[in-house]
Amino acid sequence: MPHLFSPLKIKNIEFKNRIVVSPMCEYSSEDGFASDWHLVHLGSRAIGGAALVMTEAIAVSPEGRISYGDLGIYKDEHIDKLKQITDFIHQHGAAAGTQLAHAGRKASHELPGHYQIGTYGRQRKAESQHQVAKRRKSFGCAVAQYHQQRNRA
Ligand SMILES: Cc1cc2nc3c(=O)[nH]c(=O)nc-3n(C[C@H](O)[C@H](O)[C@H](O)COP(=O)(O)O)c2cc1C
Image (cartoon, rainbow, N blue to C red):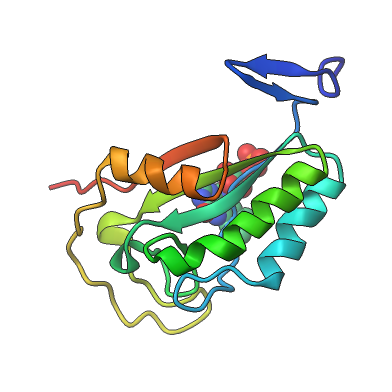
């Protein structure tokens, strides 16, 4: 793979190589808050040399979380810890990305491994993309992926 470690520029973002840590739910949040767990988990990937480190799916409303252990960005109080994580990733030469999400009718599940107690059953409306973009900027991420489950009839 000759290009794996070569830099890449997409729009105004310079990636130092082609290695991306994909979004991975960690089921480690309470009420959507990031913690030192997320700081270490994501920060260590930046130290390890990835060019882009994505957070897990981060819900724009509490009902839109896949499980109640997911990260959220539905309260202003969520921002401080996310900003600390973003800053740490940047300090170690990686770009920080996030996956702004609403899990639609697949939302509000139990944690994996727990008995499934059902879902809310109906998709709640996610915030508009404009509001979502404001959320991304609030903690300094350069990259955002919009992740929304769609209902099928
Ligand atoms: C534990 C775990 C959690 C994941 N959480 C998310 C997630 O939050 N959002 C998402 O789009 N994909 C999620 N994925 C999928 C991964 O981002 C990735 O697409 C998948 O592991 C396939 O990657 P690969 O093609 O490099 O094997 C998750 C995967 C794993 C293993």
